[in-house]
Length: 468
Image (cartoon, rainbow, N blue to C red; front, side):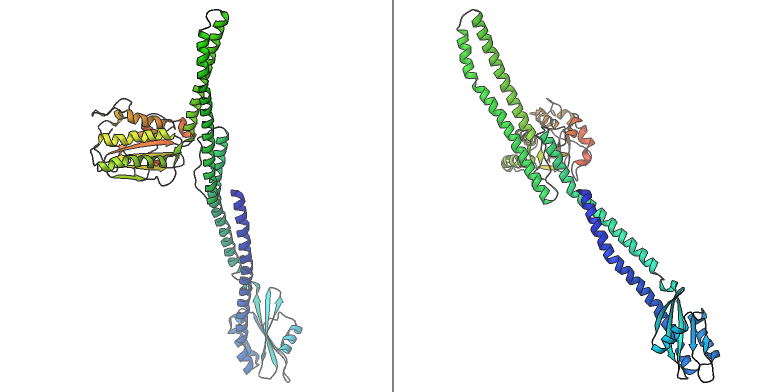
């Protein structure tokens, strides 16, 4: 599609360039020819006053030599015989006698093609009453002077237009093709069983609509699979009641090989049903995680809950980046729990009236959730990130941050602590979107430091004192 668009644009631009450049080139050539012939007419007109006064050869020689063309030997004067005198011929004649007779008879200027250029024949009345003919030779170089340079400029301009159109078409084609490729790759991944794959809703309106439809379809497919597995688990769970009855009846059969075999069969059947239930429910939970959720929607929902308590405590609350959908490969309940853990830390470990904010920033391969506050901070951020460790203050166990870290690591991301623009803590939760970003994830905040250039605009480069 990209190259097809480039070819179409090149063809159209080339046709437009040819449609304008070819006529313009011909006009330039005609203008150069007209300029040379007009100059020749002026040279011939300069001889006219002398011919009107005299036909003396010496005086005519001086008049011819006084012109630029005459000095160059490109003017010839043909005066017919008058009375007893003969014809007067000045300069080199390049046309035939018949051409001179025709010009004299017609009485108007004419241009003839001669070897090496053109000859302008200008009839002029002389003092004797006859018609003399002034012949001005115009070399081929004068006729085509400047034409080659003009054509070269036109060619360069045309080539520049074609190259420019190729660049513009390539950029436009990239803008069209890139979302289409992402959509095709997501469809391929979905077909291979990766139910958590989603497509960024950008590009032209048609591709955005296709991306929205694809994401809706993927959500529906994952939800249907999860419902089917849950239904299988529920149906299997219903078998436990008759199995309990069978186990009780088998226990009352007494001793004997048949009774023992019956009890073993009932126990085996019960184990198989339990395994079916565990497998079905495990797959259902995995499917729910693979479906993911809209982080912006979850943040808006949880912030609406916490804003009521913040209003009671006089805390200023700000959110950013939650106006548009932001898909993340995390189950809704898990993301809500992680966000509640972070906001709970703000309320537990900062004084009343301390402001806080939640920002969301997304790129092609990651979504970053920033929870910032204006609190006092803590002394040991490394200890706060370790499970079961706090900052030494009452009620600080570090388990909340560990919950957040585990949620981030399920996507291949991580968590880091830093100094916020509000003056207190900034917790950066890195949620990876691409499968390749998940394979190389490491524990600790080093991943975020290595990728901090992709976090957000205006984010502080280093980490300072923080709170739990």
